[in-house]
Image (cartoon, rainbow, N blue to C red; front, side):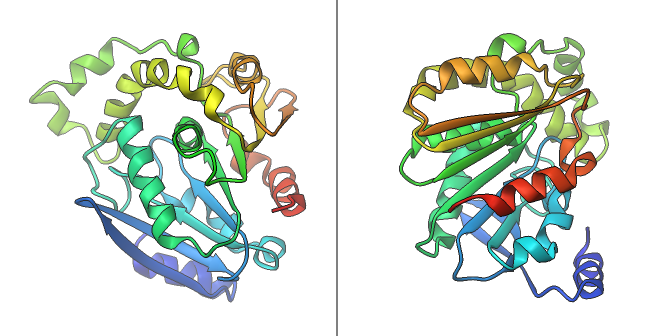
Length: 255
């Protein structure tokens, strides 16, 4: 969404918002913030491809606004955050971790990640286990064995073909090609996670296999608590198709 479209969207719902960016280690992180600036934070991380507006309906929801500060970012390579140039999972998570430090208000933070945003927040919590109270993993791709990188991704990564790939598909292709090896590197660190963890996954997700749920249940051995919400017959697009269920769960969190 352009700045004009963003303004129109929030004006229609009479939602106060901040549309801004931070410069961190040579990267630009664009973000939208709504809600009570002194409240606990719901921090939303989108998948691949995507941008902050994947969560736009959450950011204007009256129930969530009454209880939380909410921030949704454009990850590196997407939206207005160094568009077109992807980074691997470790770099993404490192920069977003620095962003959360700079924007922290001293209250608890809940990280919410969909699809590739799932392993992004898992990496953050594995590296800084004391910084995040709760993780909400929506259809998250965390199990390296479940990833089967398509060989055609390597072909379109190569010059000159990569430069004719339109829009956000180029960085999406890059990071999805890297994902399996990134998850292999992440696996030994999963025992570091001490946050509360909520996993929400559709049982018929064709893009991120439901087997990820069993993997996370097995590997998150030191999580403070682990709750699994399986949505029967749901596909990969649960943040939108099951908005009310996810919104209600977020509202009931104790942060």
